[in-house]
Image 1 (cartoon, rainbow, N blue to C red):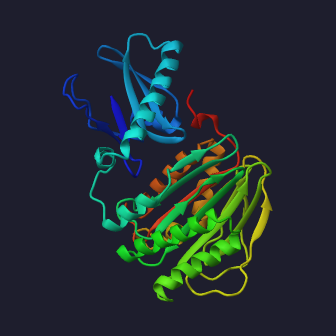
Image 2: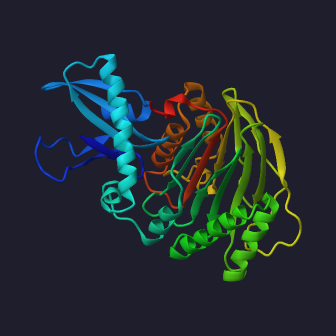
Image 3: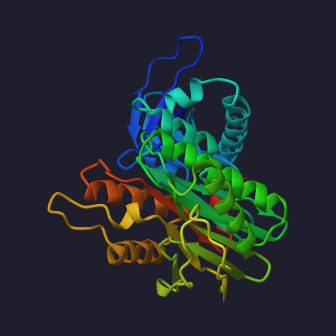
Length: 359
């Protein structure tokens, strides 16, 4: 049985086979309260009793992206069987990835409700939510998943340099999605021309202003991390500064001389800051929709609550993608499951987590 995780990574949804037979399992399983969910969050094989033997619940990983969970029925769940199950799960994940771009079936199953046109545009622009090498782990999420219109993250790996960016386009309608698409297109074009951070920001600024005049603005943070040396460089464009967690505590707020938002027609040089990281550092990039979400009493989620959450989960040893998943869940709980503003998150960890790769 194959279960795929939904967009908000809250439920695991059964993928029915083309031909019926073999019984119908539970169509949806909770990520937070089921054995399947434990396999998904911990990346460890879970074993439960079954009517005709045992069930193995194995995470479906495409490289480092968690797609869902595979359920296998076995007689004897010994170590050899578990190893083979993990290898089979890797093969199934590869097959799913190779086919999902050619059909809407995968995306339909991953949705538990209808999506707006603006969110459809946003999701088509996003890279995979998780990526890692031996030296770095990247995880990103956007909320509300089915209605997001302006928040967008992007990252590529070029040689030893990780490029990462998080943008917040003004507005909450279809035009904000168009603005975000133009922004990330300008970012990728400048990046692929080998422009530095300041020149890349200037290029995006020019692109947005040429299309919208001064009527549309985008805030953002652009960064580069040399994964061989740990040197981090970043620039801010009217955006909240990233947070650096080191040794289970907030080490530094990554302030940099504030630059104006993109699209305003900036002509003066934009400041670029540098910092030497140490192994194990985690950097969180976030949009203001994260900290400015209010509960029923009008209380902000706030930076302090965000920092406490990051530190706590770093201390507990949660992986970067699982930390983001639970952070989004905490944000939605705080806001009564409905956000009034988009929230974008990108977490970069300078080390390799072996749990994010299957044999």
